[in-house]
Image: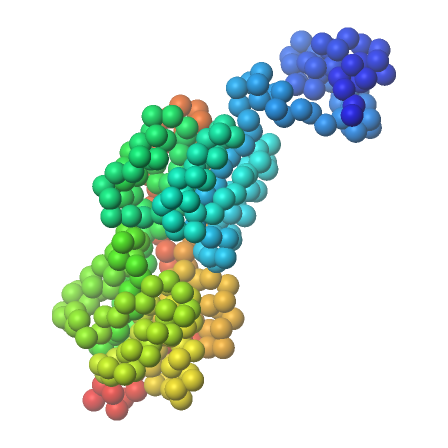
Length: 340
């Protein structure tokens, strides 16, 4: 292992000069800095980040806790966060909560034990108005950016989120403009604020069109392809006369569309399907899905910008980013016989 004194011996300077040159101290000439840095690279010198952290009281580490790495929503967000962290000389530590509060608490404590300089957190939403681990985060003072919507238990932290109400409204408005009046809605987990907001966007668009929300068109669906399949089978069994289905997310939409197609229905000739999120599979599904583009990369960039302000001692406002509709082949005007 190459040490500072080895570089100093080769450069014929003091260890202090080498240390200052590698830290870009102003009292060392540019030519000396360049010579020492070039020598350090040639000798394969790797800085001791732990020692640097002890001196600077920083670790150059960010923590990121998400529900699951298999959730396609997080892919581009993580990429944006890691890219920005890399540019700043930081490393990103990733952990999964699996949507379990007890696991989330363990992961947060592990991050704190690593003395991360900041924590990006996609929270596990719960009914409780408070949470001991979030209270501990407030007391600890570690900069935290919430990747998602505000909830009582995580109040007081800065959030970066999608405008889910407007996004869902846009999806429903698109179906209404096509002529649909019987639009089924497959709901996500009601405990989560973003599921509530997406349902509210759907209801808002219907109210604006002076169409009463029909409970017979509302089906619990969850978040997965399998849950979308179950909801679709329930809808087909109950036969509420829907000419379109709007779903909580793209995975539910894919499960829904699979069942409809397997039952011999044509999309969109017989029934339209719209999702939310614009995951990669949505565009490449056998009937490319109309969906809402969740600004995943921009959410990651905005989250890092917010973190930098927190590290600088500022109190940044929460950010709410717009979500636009991507119209593809899964939506069209309803069949005339169904709207007659």
